[in-house]
Image (cartoon, rainbow, N blue to C red):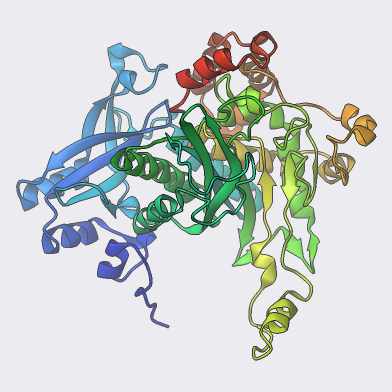
Length: 502
């Protein structure tokens, strides 16, 4: 059956009449030559998690072919602190399946994400993107399943205070205009992300909204759909670049920082996962979680403390991960329970199609759809400081680890919690559980203790882990949260330091 790409928002997909994952060099050349594209931009992620750029003005067909075939050289020591300046030359090679039309450039431009290669023409072992690729490959070898993920990208828009239609403090959840001031901005971000290939689930305003002096802070969220983990990381990196660039055009500030100030909602980057095989969700069967799901959950819980090294990477992360907030601190899991670290959200199972027929009496039950396909398992501690490639690589390693652990199913069952563990009535339950680190320094120690799990199968390189541990320890923040307490001035200064995380 021939696919119809009419509704696909990506101009390249519409023009080429094929999915992004099928793009070839010939396709890119065809699009460039037939759409008056004048510039190619190589994009690649550095150690700070942000997109870097190399611009090329196309001068001829031969020049275009050369760029797309051989890539270009870059200085690796300026991109990654663990690469020595004496032997730092790297190649950046474009991945055609990531090509998209630049939504901002006045000069018609095509952007392409790149991978790093060494002087020997081999992938750079310590590159975050390649680490994720290795993690997924090893997961598939061990389990025979594909690991999929999606992110919930929370952020604050920072602007001058608007007096009209004010929303009550910390009551912004799913507000509409005019009480949500930046809904149009959010929708424009969503459209631009979709046009670059991002698979978006939905967008909405979030709980956090408050004012400090004449400055207004409004929290929103854009949530994605599950795709394979390499694609998920690419989409989130591009999305953050789009949102910041558009914010600059609007003349507003935007931050993914984990915490803005004490007593107000922080911003997380919850990651939902799903295991797929032959088009079937392997997390659920007959409306119940499978042993596959329990094994993956066990693995994530078992090394959750060291996963913070990739998902909570600066001191402000640990001002969000505090007890008695919605952000988790105890290592446990549960159903529909927002006080746990790993949550199994409400799914669509038995009688799912009855709701739509009750709301719409003219409709017939949609028996052809598989409601179980939507079930995910959510990891709730990461935030906007995360290195997206390494975080998803770490989750793939953790899930694989769960399949290799002895008694992993029982391990998961022993850490299931059905109550709100932040409630004082359930203090005994909370006290029997392990806890996440409370600082970057503790996170580094956890990674040191569990590094062999990440290094197995050659997924995480020694240099990469050494560099991360060194960086986390350099913050020297073991007592920072206690030292600062609720001192608003000191918190504000700390937040300013890390306002542009990830």
